[in-house]
Amino acid sequence: LSRVVANEWAADAIRVNVVCPMAMTAGVEAWRAAAPELYEQSLTKVPLGRFGDPQTDVAPIVAFLISDDSVYMTGQTLMADGGADKIY
Image (cartoon, rainbow, N blue to C red; front, top):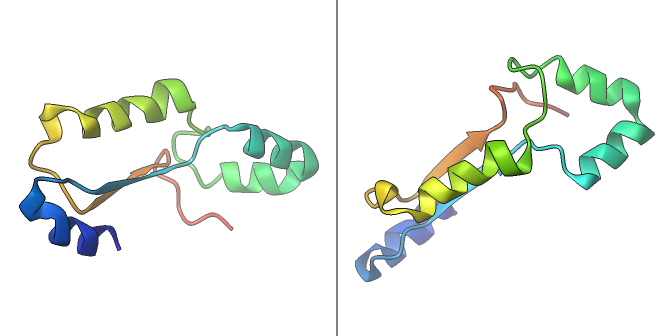
């Protein structure tokens, strides 16, 4: 979907990118408390060994995307997931 929209809006100089974070949000913390075994099992699939921090791990990626440094990037999906395999 992001690629389609990026192609449609490119003529208007509108860039469209997607960030897929695996971050330690309040929802993930609640899930960890409710299902600690499933959380630990999911964590084993993250090569960096942790869920990302929204401020220090995900925000810089978003800052890059809104900066002029990414002016030639559109229609991309960036996985901010610590290198994780699929987690169910």
